[in-house]
Image (cartoon, rainbow, N blue to C red; front, side, top):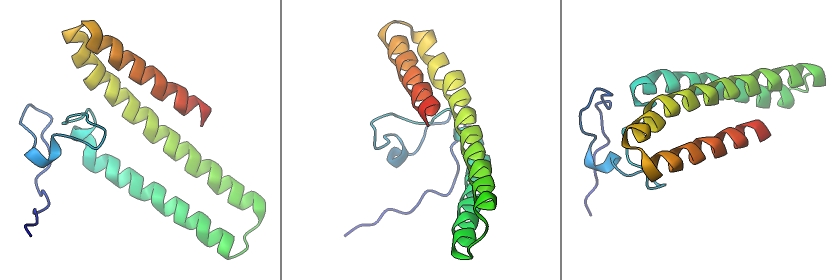
Length: 124
């Protein structure tokens, strides 16, 4: 059985080709994605949010006052929303802008996709 080594070098947002194992995501979209240039910053931000969520678990475990837990829930929610908006902006600047250059059905599909994502964010 052959195992593949994890990729160690980051994607370059300036036109280099992604590795073969990175070209197809589980959803069928191909990289590099709009967030690739900021990947390290996004991962750092997500780790910080993860720490906030672990803090919530600890607060509940330690029977912290309800309002204090809710305050932390609000802060965690705002952090996730801010991350989502940043990702959405990068999607619009990269993926939708690239589709606009191509025009036609690709642009329509990307706009519909972005609109659906915005709708999901508004419902959350």
